[in-house]
Length: 264
Image (cartoon, rainbow, N blue to C red):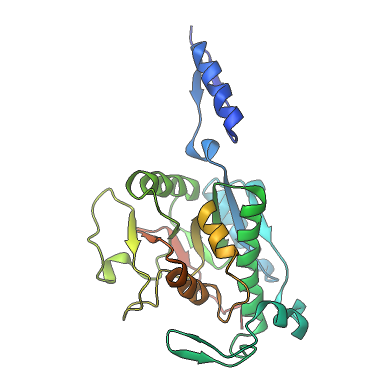
């Protein structure tokens, strides 16, 4: 007789326990999310409608909100000049030929808040030694199961590109339109150049939904502050500087929800 056991596998010790259970002919049921230590994050501000909408999305696609860490502070009203001096570049800087004045007045406090929350996600991944972090912003909706696609992307990346660092998912721009690699049936992950092109300014694809490895999170975290741009443009700069291996998902499941920007 074969007994069926459901077990959550989060650590190496759990994996050893798996081997012991298998010795006694137990049938184990688990997913990649059980084996890998994957943490989900939601970057959220003060717009309650966005929060309620994201909870509906999580419920729709069976992502337990208890497994999502909500990054709620600081918000733009919490950002003062002293805070800006700590996190924003205070000298004249340049990204891709564009000059920025000291203190980066082109970045509003909303953008400072959003960018810093991305930084806090990276910090939490490192502090808790998660294998992967799934970082989401609250201005989106989905057209597919979130966890299933996260697992699919990670599985394909680990099999095809074991050196990968980060992957972006959004329908904002299709990988088919950027004249890089050919999109093939059954393949959902594609390498993205960090170079500026007529289609985009580097390896990012907005910053509303991406999966980052622990190694990449550490690399970005150590170089994130101070910044001179919102998260997607700033990461474009860091990707090229740090030679980050970026990828795009195609087809993607994340859609930009029509909205007025909260980072103004």
